Image (tube, rainbow, N blue to C red):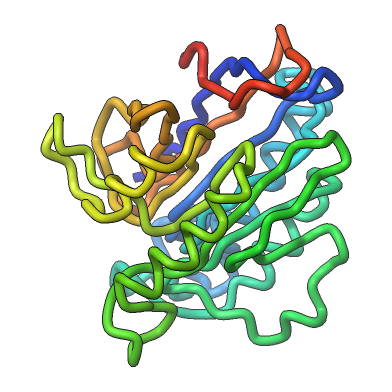
Length: 261
């Protein structure tokens, strides 16, 4: 598939100084140059960074205060199979040029060969909560639930312990790769993550990993969750959301998505 869908949303409950942010996940593919792979095709994260800068320059979207990246940014140079595992440094370097703050959790296909060489504006979250220049607070947990002997995986108890340590700090946003299931619409995800968020988090969760073909915003208890690995009809398609903030509040209430288009 050669299209890169971008979706927009308006949000309430963000700091008054906040403009906009962009969220993305599962950019597992390469740019399309021709019908024959040349080996020089960039990761999709690099092309998305270029597109966002272009959209900002022509005022199609406002300048972004932050990027929230929910993991899985790699694909093999020849895209020979879904789910390649490799170094995502090039994608993160490109994305860091878009905004002062790029917050990322690693997916189960992501490797950072030299994390110490990342630009200062990039923060990889795995149990931490950070406060952005705007005052927005974001926590995150990398990886997925699975066999701890495999790459970027934790047992369910260990994953939930770290996630709930983050949610107890009451961040505005929770950034995950592993997301909740949507039991009402029978869509895949983790039921334990869903239960924990439904009973213990009032903020906005951004996640990926499991593709949903439609209706990517759900309510979970007093909070909301947005799957940015959807919509679309190919797993190797960019799914991203730009959140504008035309009517910001003081930020005392948890952020909520007010409209999608």
